[in-house]
Length: 170
Image (cartoon, rainbow, N blue to C red; front, side, top):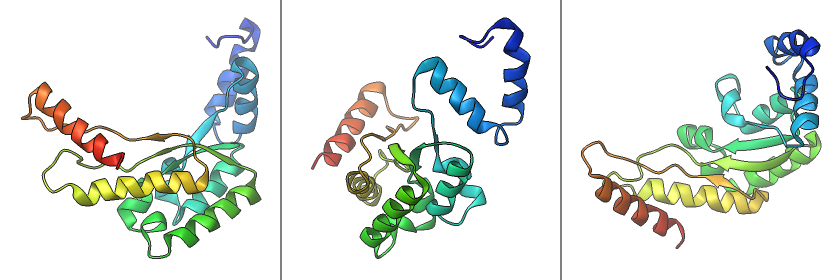
């Protein structure tokens, strides 16, 4: 069942969902009207099909989305974008592309890593770069995943996460 959709229209909505991209503009509009929300998708979903974040953004806009979650994972894994030498210039290009496409960044995801592992300084610095990049792009929210190591007690894991997150605030 789809909340807010009359019983007789259920099959129609299900058919639209089955053809995701082809009908995504209709689905996005339905969800926006049903729940009055901003529906976003992440550049990370298109990373395996694209060579750049800008290309991911194009796919997202073509699918009818107006809001984007910038996933820094592709940049981090490939050492491109915000991890390139001219990263500030890169961010200017991303801003221009977003304006050109009429899309808005509503959140971001920092890369996945091992924030609790010994010698995680490079990952911590990379996460800080993502936070700074969000500020440059006007992204109001970033998801930073905590870490875990199987051999740690809950208390040890919480303490190491605290140290990691406190370092991000410096």
